[in-house]
Image (cartoon, rainbow, N blue to C red; front, side, top):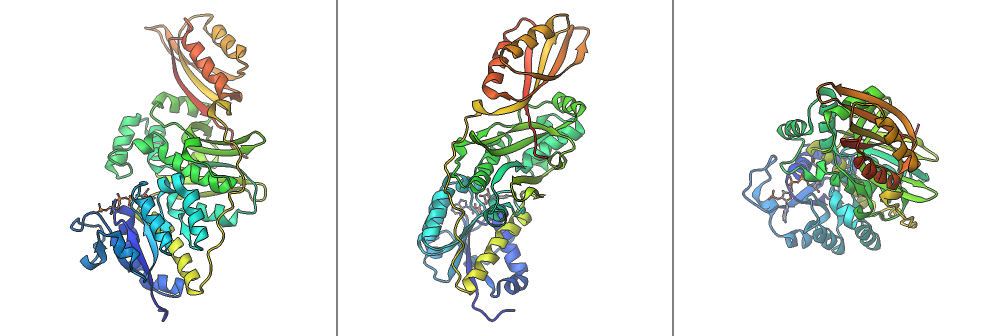
Amino acid sequence: MSDSQPIGVALLGLGVVGSGVAEALERRRDALARSVGAPLELRKALVRDLGKPRPFPLPPHKLTLRMEEILDDPDVRVVVELMGGETPAGEHVRRALERGKHVVTANKELMAKDGPDLLALADSKRLNLRFEGAVGGAIPVIGALSRDLLANRVRSIHAIINGTTNFILTRMAEDGMDAGQALRLAQERGYAEADPANDVEGLDAAYKLAILATLAFHSPISTRQVYWEGISRLSPQDFRYARELGYAIKLLAVAKRDQDGLEARVHPALIPEAHILAKVGGVFNAVEVAGDLVGRAVFHGLGAGPAPTASAVLGDLVDIGRMLLVNAEPPKAVPMDRSDAVKDMSQVSTRYYLRLHVPDRAGVLAKITRVLGDLDISIASVIQKDTDPVTQTAEIVITTHPSREAALRRSLAMLGGLDVVKEVSNMIRLEELPS
Ligand SMILES: NC(=O)c1ccc[n+]([C@@H]2O[C@H](COP(=O)([O-])OP(=O)(O)OC[C@H]3O[C@@H](n4cnc5c(N)ncnc54)[C@H](OP(=O)(O)O)[C@@H]3O)[C@@H](O)[C@H]2O)c1
């Protein structure tokens, strides 16, 4: 054990992650003290309900309903925000920084919406604002982009950063479940919240992508600039056809830079089955960063849960504790010295998978290919699937070469109006990945 004065820590929130952090601080006290050079002492935890049963109960004198108790305690050197949401978490983080306290947070929504401002405030006060737990749980990707990969010109990020949807898609792919069944299983196992909308609709991944893209491209990218779309339109047929074509379907977060600007988008995508991201199953997350010096680096691990998130939060705490012991100033924040435009989704070019329900008769394909051809959408493959002799209908699956999204959307409207198309059943983007 170290003889140095303890470093006081306060938690804002003692829920799933807060309890995981409190437990690890207590149970790993001696090991953490050896790593830091001084004990990390949990002095107070801010909660809403003092009487609520907790997964890791703290003595009553350590719980408080008043943020002032934490702000006014000079021995609290680091505030760890684990409440979630923008309000009042953002206000508390701001006040903690203004009162000279370092901050650790795992709050993706807050960092996606207010991260650049809060980081500038922390920088101006020579304080740390660390947020490794905000993206990818235990995966050390924020530290990598903020430090280890900083010398790179990052070209792209391709990521699976929502464990709930990856669990659902894995069950749909492996067990043939529909989205509803897979979601219910995720909820039974505690992988999905009672209200899973943010996860299923892609917003959670959009928050995380905004954070990653901001760091990677040195340009403040807000969630409003991220295109996001969820997984609810996917059906078991899409998984079957994708597999036959040699692809997996994932909710993919993509950020790219090319000569025309930046792309930031979250949507389901067909990706080659042999690619490492296609093998990321269940609640695991993975982030692939491509840069000019590093080539391709892939980070893989558990993306949520009390222990993995505590791992990231404690890593940040240990780092801050070490700096405090030697009175070191925090490293400069990643410079936000670029302001490349983020392309509107209509300007983005990708490949596409289209599934159409058509009458099973001659001449259908000719009319469909004419619509696509007129819009300069070049077809890579066409397969006719699942003919139904009773209704005399069939499914056609088309994959395209890269085309502008604007053209593709026009083609969907035109295909929907053809007498030879009963229904445009689905459109999924097909992603070329770095190799
Ligand atoms: N859960 C995960 O696996 C995970 C993974 C990575 C990142 N995160 C992030 O970590 C953060 C916490 O998530 P969580 O799952 O631990 O949430 P949670 O279980 O809902 O816990 C939230 C905690 O904050 C407290 N709280 C909320 N509003 C408050 C207020 N106005 N005043 C005082 N206390 C308040 C709650 O107090 P009471 O208990 O008294 O109600 C509760 O203890 C979020 O930003 C989340 O995005 C979570």
